[in-house]
Image (cartoon, rainbow, N blue to C red):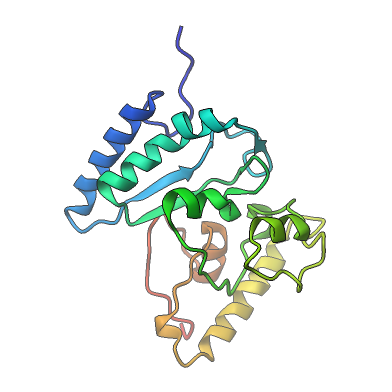
Amino acid sequence: AARRPALRVLSEDPLLTGLVAAGLVRGLQAHGVGACVKHFVANDAETDRMTVDNRVDERTLHDLYLEPFRIVEEDARPWSYMAAYNAVNGPTMTQNPLVADVLKVPVDVEPLVREHAKFQCDVGTVRSALSRSWPALRFDHLEETWWPALDETEADVLRRAHAFRQNAAAWADWREVAVVSHWGFLLRLTGRSFANAEHSPFDPMV
């Protein structure tokens, strides 16, 4: 008997999954709607998905997990991807070399504000591991264990959202800044809940 497919997976066949996903992406983007493909990669279960390190052998990783993403990238060129929370063979997916190697996405993002600490994808990855994964980047400003011991409180994240709004209001080019974050921080920043891949103008003066 076939096992139940994981959440949000189109099928258990990598070829079929890639072809169906590519068709969906082409259909959406033909009407000016940007598609966001997720979760890259090996997001098999919801249990401990923010902390689990999925160990996958090379053949399984490329033939089963990466193949659908390769197909959809080559056939449909989606506008965006969402990284999985989990790690794969060590590095978390937000900092995993697979992002550059498979999706050909350069690491060229200047983070201006962190996520709510509870939703940090890279919590648990020490500075030395970050340095090994990204030798071209500098992590000297971080302690070896840099993440907070406890989850950030509601009051703390509200204070950070307020501080970010004040800082953004002082930027001459704030109209050209894209705030990319988890819905939890955006909720505290704007007072509204966003769906996946939803966007909205941000005015720090309001």
